Length: 585
Image (cartoon, rainbow, N blue to C red; front, side, top):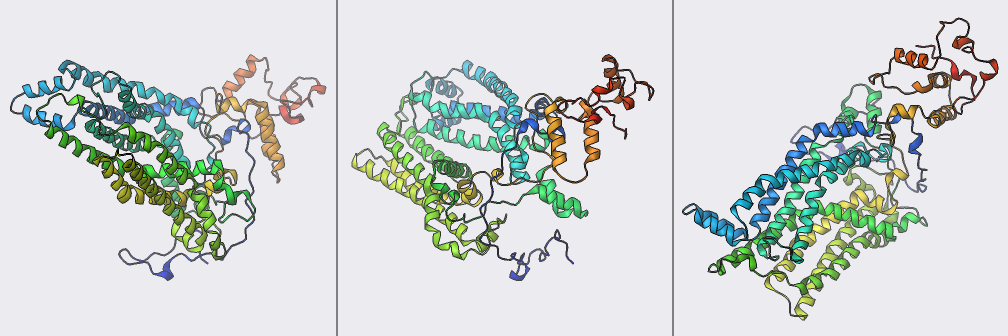
């Protein structure tokens, strides 16, 4: 008999996988009841043994030990942003001046002065600004423990998603200062703050596009250097997945597989008459859909838009410089963008965003005819398998992509019509409209479809953690206050753990006996100072409790106390065994 955890037989490398060699579909499963929403657990009563890290301070110490690698990435990013800022006044003029300086260095000095800089100021800026900006960015890491410590691992559908969320939160804190600087810089130009950029010309806009691309690249590198496995001291998601597939111990493989990914209870399509069927049309569902599409666009659309913008504005700057080669005051050049164009683009952008947010709702309404064709409502991890057995989900995902691309095309058409009617269209605006139609709109459709493949259930139902609990040895990342040892001293935590043991069924008398006998030693890490039995005896001596090794007045005979005090409730647990020691020590 084949083990349920055995790996499927794959064809030799280089040979195609035949249809009969694919993993067979499971028996049809339809008409599932609506998933039951689980109550939220109280994190204040999580026992110490189910908390991942000793304290938030431990997370901070681990982060500080690996912070040198992200610091180098941030230092390089700030140097690159400074170079783009300096060269942004006119990248083409800088390039021509550097070529001319090979023959006569005075050309470079003249270019620096004409572009609004001084040699001393540039030298000082390159010496101090990147290092100072990096030092100001690193303290943001001190906020990471508060942002990560409250996460509940069992509410994540997979271990990879949990660890990715931890790394993303830390990365967002470290990248926040450079992101704010790049996004606020155009506003400082529009408000005419004193700086070398006198306007948003083609050169500054091309450098700004490169700055956005640098942010995307730095984000990927920083997140790679702050993995959750090092911050939290847990097994990497990739190694855990390998254990679930390759380990020889079947029990260990089964436990690892249950921790790698849980079964998603949010089946599709939702049952008729349930709130989930219209969840995409609600405000919360629309905002969640817009967030998922925007996050997917960071991978599909934004890199293409950044590259296209750099190319278009760079060519414009090149043409401008060579057409005004006789004029050296290039910092006073007018912007290729007119304020009328920005006023027209703002409401059209809002319209497109609203259409993107409502695209899943429209798709769900149009895919109603596919409901009867669903053969299996189970949630498979592979998209190809899901699309094969669930045509309704495939239809919604495909329609969402088409709607997203259509909204982009509609926005481009409206912009072209209004610009032409108001006679404010320029050659640059027509180039952008053509690029949106040919490049960005199809990519936006692909981004929306990719977002719904993994996030359609989030849009309709809400987070996966509301309907399932993934098997994991930990409930909470870190205590909200103090350490795990401090939480072990909390009488409410001990009482909740005792109550849970009694309600779980089975024979837990030994665990309850140890719980009552442990007292404040419910959870003490043996590696922590003062965790030995000798330290406990010293604490007893300080309280005046003298051990008499089983004689009169020992703990076995009441510890010298009055017999009426033996049944007095200890920490809210009315058990006369509360003072007995653990006999297994």
